[in-house]
Amino acid sequence: MLPTTATASTPPPAPAPAPAPGEPHAALFLALGYMRLPDLLACWRVCRLLGEAVAGDPLLWRRVTVEPPLSKRLTDDALLKLTARAEGTLRSLHLLGCSLVSDAGLLRVVERNPSVTELYVPKCTGLTGDGVVKIVQLLDEQNGNTNRLRLHGISRMTKHHLDIINSLMCKRNPQVKEDGRPLFYNHRVHEMLNTNDERPIDVDVCPMCKNVRLVFDCTRDDCRKAEYSWCQGWWCRGCLFCVARCENCGGCISSEDLSDACLACSDFMCLACWLTFPKCSTCNRPYCERHGHLMVPLSLPGQFSCHHCMELNSSLERQEEGY
Image (cartoon, one colour):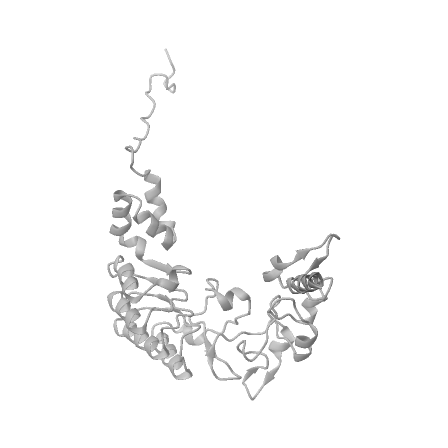
């Protein structure tokens, strides 16, 4: 007799039924919730079953993020159709550089989705400060709980608009007023959506020019300790129009460093960081890390030429051939 623990007479489990020919695998339906918007829209057109799964599941549309290049073509009507798939349960709306979206179009979306908690509209140049205030007021009237706004690049945003937005958000989020976390410069923070920024509102009033922009704090300890009464803060705390920032360390750059530490690209770098980077063998200018791919390697190991010097050499060679 076989022991009771033996499984010789136990039939093996039946294998999972294979999908019918032409039908998507079941795992693909589970992956829909992790797809970005372009991939989700592509799956919508693959087949009938996937199209029904994408269009008929409101959970897939509770978080909508529109990024370039799709953002350049997004209109008010297209945004309304996209967010309507959430059936009023939209929680997070990220619009990155959607210049065709207007105040009225975004207001219609918020009216149908009063539970929005995150509204990211950086560089949406079709929006205005007045329009954003109306949207935040509407969310407040509908007992919304908006706890995060990204408004960098909004047209005609003033201190008055920012004060109203802060007061409305402070009603249900007291930490908005008390938040004093610094913002240090890097290129991603300035150009793209910074998902690591935990502050409720990204913009502030620049203590130097008094405009509403991204206001960066200096990474240098000695700068953060130096306080001046005329600006009620750090002397080098300000927007990029008022204070030049090092692309490498995010610290402030003095006027002397701007003239001495020249780069082969369009960015800026402090002298301390400039000394640590490899230089062009012709003009003695380095690239920042973001533009390091523009280096043209030379035959000698470890040496390179910048694209400016290469273009100049090519132009001189063509002139010599013409004579």
